Length: 359
Image (tube, one colour):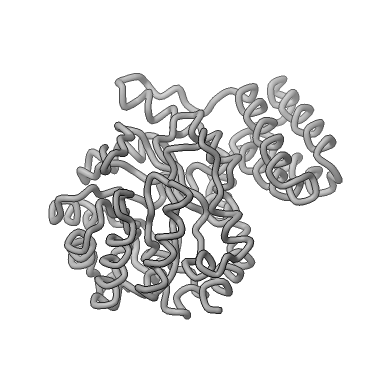
């Protein structure tokens, strides 16, 4: 898929996720075959106010490119000014979030609440497109407010007509929960209604899910969110399948161990040990949920006091998995629980994000 001067081929995209898509996951996802990654979503107002956390979220290294930045806001002028500032960081893509359905965001008339206001949506995208210049602009959308008020076709055309080079469609409505099945039929209709790139998103947890979405809807690529947490291997597995290979399945525990330890080290370098420790614990849990013994790991990991001890615990636990020490406990029930509760971070992070966007 080509967007302006950016060409990611047939590869998948790592979604922006609060407190998840820091540099460590972006780098590891790229190493595992992601075609494009995103920084965490940032407040447009936070950008122009030089908010410390906002600017930290925006930072990335040259070896992470190609990379996109996603912004949140509801004022066309603020969006325009923020994009002008973001261009100085030289991202490969800038995305306007009109798809976030978190209640704190909706209460402040941002995110997917903009889907109900076509006039404002048009102004935001037009001002954003004018400001982005030669950097492609994309827009994140949902199907509509609810299943009785679906307006994705109209909003896709608004994005196209006002200068967006790409849209990403989360195949649920604003009021839908994660338990609600995404409706791919509207993704197909939207793709057929516009001439710009269309990315599919929503509950894609396996490489086969991504292939099915592309084949059934004709979308140009797929954005992976929760399906990449603890599972950056999904990108390489998809790439192999796209080239005609048989899916190799989830990697052996030795591969997971090396990847976990590498991400822990990257987190420590980025944040320092005190901040990195809790982040590293979460990521290690998300990796190890795919293997037997996760309940035993959960019994121990939260009492770990430093990174060195966490590394030791990971190595010892992975050795036991390799030796078939743990009984076969990895059931569909465990997997479903993780799918529902995999995002432990939302409340505090969206509270901070909204605060930056409304001051």
